[in-house]
Image (cartoon, rainbow, N blue to C red):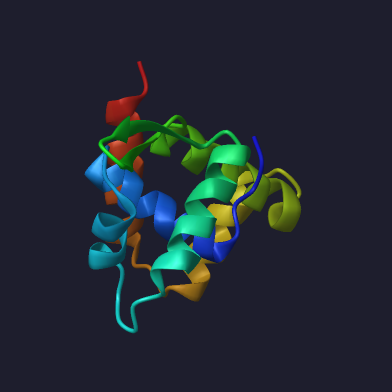
Length: 120
């Protein structure tokens, strides 16, 4: 799966939330200052060429929808982060974030409990 630029990721986040929409709906959800219609339309077409988005015709316009699940992209991005910055070690990553975010032991225990709940 290809990595997205910041602008592409912003558009995908809105598409994942909206599920199926036109370019105007994406722009409406983006923060100020709003990008130009042509800019967002171009980004959506790039996302289509990368295989992240597809469309269906509605009258003279198009409705766009994601082909890639948000969870799949998130997993790939996290793995790339861990591999690139923490030599593939999730332990190193958690330790780094714990130190940088001044995480308390009770917060860490809470995270560990959540992980234990998720594991079979």
